[in-house]
Image (tube, rainbow, N blue to C red; front, side):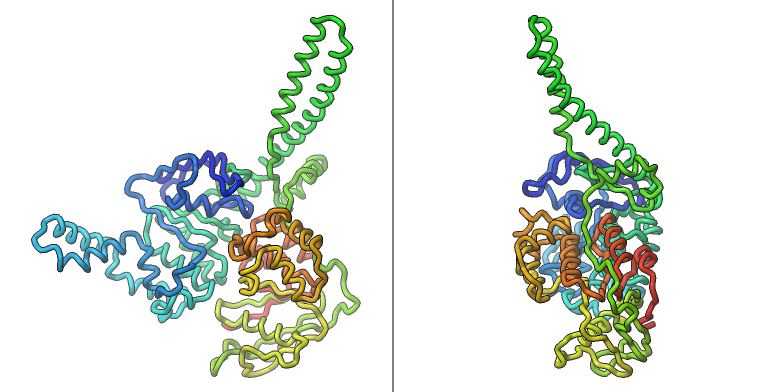
Length: 556
């Protein structure tokens, strides 16, 4: 056993995150950690690394084992060079470098320091740190990142590049257990394939927080955090779906029987009370009083139980028997409500966006050339290409052409061809990052500003409805600062912004990043029913399979 964790209580403010989390991790085991947004998966990682100490329970790590972890955020680290950042997070690197650099001048004939210096040299060699820079350079080239970025500030890199830096760091750490939080968000398809290949072959144990179904298809076991409790599922994502359906079906039946029992007990309490009141002999009164109290006690115990969060994937739920399916629909967990254009416009079939032999880039360097496509009302178009190939540049060009302001500048340079966008069509844009202008606002303030920016009427009732539709608590979440929202919460805010004006064209950039499995499924269902046109960028093979459409290759 490499690690054993038992967490009986972990709270965040007034919210109880964990009340029954228990699992073990074995050598070389690959585990996917899943759960609805806000269930405390990243908090659990902090506990496992020792950063989170405010909890009840115990975490045991085998003596001498090294745990390495990735970061999602890099606040305050942007001024370091990429190489310095990687080196600083490697096990023992700072300590060993300090000894090797400072001891020769200070140790003199001190035998203890001489031995520490000798041991440091041996350990530095054992960890391969003398070849570190050349190995990192090779890893950069393997991930098609320009090695010159090694000596640039970390803050100058894109989100996708930072994800790959985290992967390089974890791979080079060679610990016994790697904890990786959402590794494939912002990764392109080549980088993701490389990560999955590494995951399958890695000598270390790996626990990865992810809802990327491609990654979950390559793990040995899945642990789900649900209602503060951990549930283990042997096998990969496909096995999880089958097992989850069977377990959830049994739990739904049990919960339904409990609800019926509660109704019967309520009737029993009333019946025993009336019979007690009608009784005339002390013995009969005592008997009905005892039966009433017994029913009350059981009723109190059952009503105190929290309702479990039930979710079965749509395909599996479709195979359930009618009666069970109806019961599941009655009790299933609340999901986001994505309101999209449900009817085709009277301009169905109209050409909305067209690119002809298009080449865009910056300065004197085109990013891509020879791009041709046309998008009509109701059609789907996938922009496919590597990170940095120019997909986002093309989206910016489309948005610039769609602007009603004729003097809106095109940020990139057009080397050849043209892109044409039909006028008077509303476009909803989903970007990978929240706009800076919303970060200093509260959640309610950001939603209000989004509505104002789109020229839409604003009311507190409408703001609260939108928050509720996307699983925010209108009473308590509205005052949360946007900059402190989790990745999943920011993704849901992006959906609000994209759909607020009832757009006729959606442009979506990696929409499944940060969303949990039920929310991804709800988004896919809504987009499949959407009658407008969709341009999307996604490296999620499941999502691409659902949306379909034509593909425009951007770059090589």
